[in-house]
Image 1 (tube, helix red, strand yellow):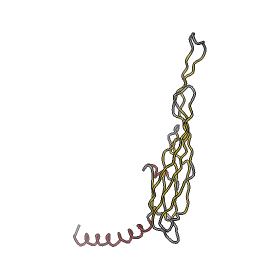
Image 2 (image 1 turned 90 degrees about the vertical axis):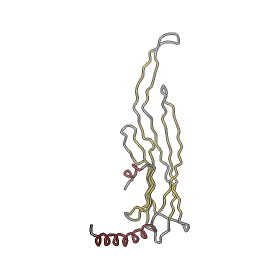
Image 3 (image 1 turned 120 degrees about the vertical axis):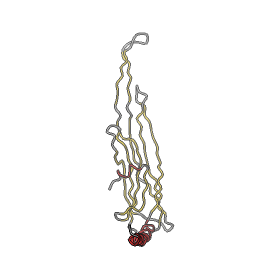
Image 4 (image 1 turned 90 degrees about the horizontal axis):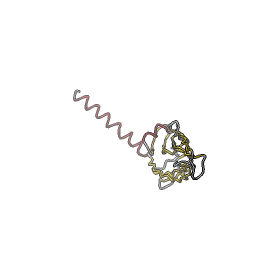
Length: 178
């Protein structure tokens, strides 16, 4: 590439970068997420497996520079995986306006999401016979069922522009509801 064209390209790039950075850094929002989770297990008779129920709540801490008027929105979602079909679904989601206080902070608590799942397992049953006689044992295989907690996602947008985000796993970004 000739030297004059190279110098012009660098000058154009440097002239546009500060304007883009100045605009976006004032609008950026930091999102930190903590999960509160509880689980309950119920024995399945004749099996070593349990049915598991999970309750998940997101505690979302947001920080940034307040704007007036505020135009940014916060979207959050809690995801699960269907054990039978192995696909990802949104268990619970929500959206609300960003409302940073004078110190530039806001806390959002999500709705409680609940999942129930049972893994693949076998049920053993014995029939017939008394204590001293022979009994028949049968084994029945049972497929997994239900939805298991997978992770979360939080996105802060100003119009169509993402100005902050937090995901428990990178692959969940594609699953975020629009």
